[in-house]
Length: 346
Image (cartoon, rainbow, N blue to C red; front, side, top):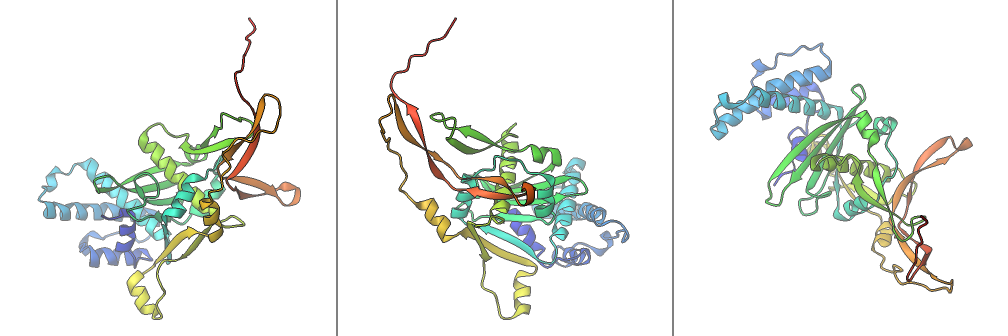
């Protein structure tokens, strides 16, 4: 089993520039040099799209030989899809720069990310500040990030005002695949997590779910969930009291040359919970019993409020904003019990 997003970065681990990308395709993928005639003065994105088309032709022919599938059976639509996919992926790869962090999310950190919520929307400045360079999140196969998703790749293209989202997935049979979609800015800013109000206490007992507003179909809902997952990861790293630890996944070598040979430009990071956060998550002294305090016809009951992230104004005239995390806590309310008679006026 393989994570297609991580495997792509591994295959191009030594790529820093467009020239090194060309060299990698020639040496590692045996792409003929006579297919690499490109306009050197063209913008990087256009060169990547052209290269994607050339490589797709080579890739399809190579796999036709390996699988015995006649090249003639490859439709123009299939070639176009492959060309666009490789072209955009090459462009995103080069936007990562000379150091490309890959974040392995542990199961405890992933569960924590899934259980919190963002009841507010994301604006463009957030995308510019945090996703102008690609973000790669992934998990092991035993503990997906959520559902059957084991990898997320996000990149915000400011000139196009679009967010490129790829998901690596694995089904129950162990078969892996990848889904990709481009979100326009107005779609992204419209995404919000629905707030589910606790029925016992609509005034105070808020409960948050991971259901998003763009749930027109199962695939769209999964993409929306992937976006929210990544947004929450980004925000958690910005909090004053950061609940997660991001540290190097592998021990550093004393020999920089050997380390460069092993990892190339990839920087493997491991994301886990802090000791304090782990204690809060694992504590079991939850108040669930009803406490009677003598108010006629009512009982004081506790309602569990799950953790959530919200914006907080601060600074001169409250002109600045930052994200804060409200931890999971108990909220107490007076609830009327017993038989209630409701009269409806005609």
